[in-house]
Image (cartoon, rainbow, N blue to C red; front, top):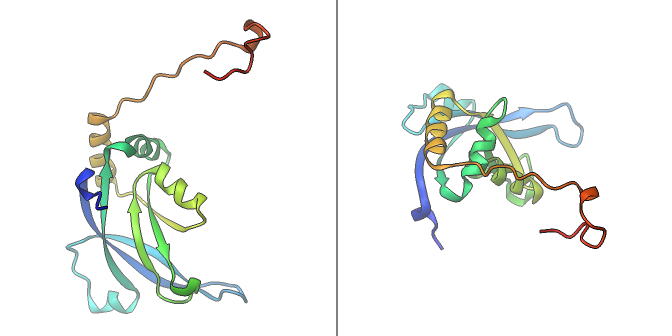
Length: 160
């Protein structure tokens, strides 16, 4: 099912993937997401020699507003990229499958043992996302739980 119609907004991006040497006998090289560019950015021949570029679409969904809020509230907001390698071989050129600004979505990807790489969120994008979140998201007020010592023993530890 195509869920793109549920998106509140979307931004086209271009990412640069580059092969990075590592000091490891088992994994001497690894592909990393290295740079974020606007989708319309012109890539020179010299830049093409230093990496591979892939276009993506960042979609913002209503039901992920809390995840965007948590990301923006962090000291260093970032974009998270879901990266998959063919045949699980990290030396082969990967595909960046998806991108998100949601802390919750990135956490779910990591919980599923996916390869998640991050880049700092550009200030202009963070401001745009913050404006959208502020207009549409209201954090739920924290409810104070009554201390268990004030609850009768028969009602203790029953979850509401």
